[in-house]
Length: 121
Image (cartoon, rainbow, N blue to C red; front, side):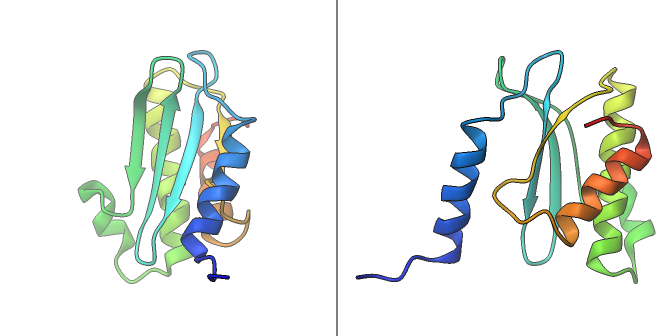
């Protein structure tokens, strides 16, 4: 029997979460993707299939703040940025989609930053 990779396991967990979580126009989904080096957050309206706002650790406007900080601190800045952009777009409440990752570390830091920035979930 072949060994199941970590990516496949995460994908299965994410599909399980996505079966229960869907974003609407009234309450879009805040999705997280975590790579080894960076973190990405998107606010998605699944009814229309569009990304409303996004932020990542690769954003040019966040790069100056992120230099010399730990990845978890960078993740909190991404959460604050996505919350600021969502509020500017008129989005106050979202559904949190952890993307199959544990609610721990960088994923939790993004959630804390988004809540601190004014998003409700």
